Image (cartoon, rainbow, N blue to C red):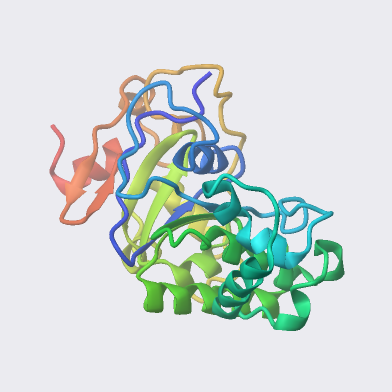
Length: 285
């Protein structure tokens, strides 16, 4: 079984790269690899940071239930310094971190279950930034929040990015969120990146048929074709099929699609892997 196959991505300083795709495409596995929770069978992850922190979808489940907010915020610092006891000096550190992410001083003494979902996610973001990392991985960080709270968290991330030069790897299935937060997008299907490029271009002028179907199934799209759901189920990752992994669901499928995996077609800073579109572009024999 291969959860990911030949994924090759870059994220620039101060940039947000969104990873999008339906459930089971490999988004969360990619996130866990990036932060070191899992090890790749092949390939390397190159970064100037020794630690890449992560913000998880479950804001409550990712926080220690018996520790107060002030302890949670400085926990990475304590681990780095090889100690476990929270001291009065650490409270000042916690207050400084809390101020960055909009957590008021009155919340520092509370436990996670005493906070709202948005407050907990601010704690998660603050903890992730405790060691001044410049790269942050966020796995569906706002999907469990109300829309108004989503906007607050997304605006916080953009503010932190502007003031601290953060690079964000933002994993989401919500294209409206991606449109707001990302400068670049990579579309993942069954463990492969099938299209990537500037967010504005990918999300308005998709080249890969899978990207098109994602856009056409987006209920928040304001123009374009009527809403359409991707037909059929993706093949099992246990079954390595020849050809394009989207061939069984693709409305443009041709015989070659079922026998050869398409090479990447590159147009400036855009890239896609599709036989049909490459032929239309004149880049494939």
